Image: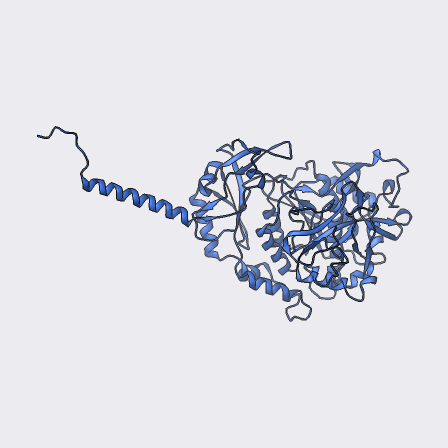
Length: 553
């Protein structure tokens, strides 16, 4: 009888070793098959002086938006070139949302596979999008970490007095269907409005009337904008809808008070809230009120304004995609940005869809003079129109246009512009003398157009009267101006102008330039950041669009 302890025989040892090898091989192959989505970690997280302070609570719930890539992107690029080439038979033959989705959206099978993946990971689908470019999901931090193979940690923000969360690794998915990004995994960069100053009128001296507007203390309001940019023009924006992108709410009474003070008709407002936002006005309601009020002032006959609202931590992709898939407003405005956030491939796709559908997207270019380094999203995107700022002078009480200077207060405050570090030179900028305008012959130059961004009267903060400044003023004014252009097109049974940059730059070098646009070459305070601006004159309405040549420091 053998009294020695039982030991595994040689065969057993070999079987155990084989099983371990098989398990390890399966694990390694599974990890190798995962698709890794680069660029989801804020640059600050990689800095040695920024260390995690804790983990984000596993029970917290986050809202995410999974972005899928377009099909046939080269064909879309070719189509967009034809849609905006006046010599092409496809000129302005825009697509519907359904047509765009059929030709360029992810397939139904791929979309359903992503939905199934989300469900299998314990994530709840909160919204499906008609173009299948986005899938909104929510889930606990624990489920998200497990699904994306990362850990969400808390960090002290290096520039702001707050804690932010971010992943400690880029997400990776056990999914064969290609995914472009997963937004919502960090709150390092939160949206900010392009307003640089909002001064209560009561704090201004009673004699403060530098630019001769008809509003209190010489501010510009109501009919002043039409007197400056569309005098003696009967067009009011009738039949047109303006869409505004916002990360806050507004007080309805503020808009009514502004309309009454300015002698304007009531324009219908429709609010679309996203990402769980309740629409309650917050500290940035001034931006929302400004956008609505100046749009009504320049286009008082609008059929409606759609205010697309998400909260202060709302998702850019959800707002932009809602505007595109609604496709109700042919002129869209954005006066917000995300500091430190650069190119966004999902947003690029959505902006291309807007252009394919004949939508004009006007974006405030910024308020801090010449850009240096990375330009904050969406400040240099080449698929939209970037809007700079001017300071307008009129005759007494907003009687008539006199002149414009580039908006520049000095000390780093003024119309933003510069050369993109992310996007190459678009074909439609080839026609401009970039050497004369201090631009780049290789990179995207911004902004494209301009309008007044200084000394604007606003009612906000639940009844407060303010004087505001910033390219925030200029972008919604341009959207309203495009409503006049598109009203004229509609009256003539023509399609809307859509993405105006190709036409803008063609006009900028054409024989009618001097009669169509105000050429602004001087700044209030001569500084290295002073740049040339072009804003529309009344004659622009009979042309496809207005222009501002790209001028950079």
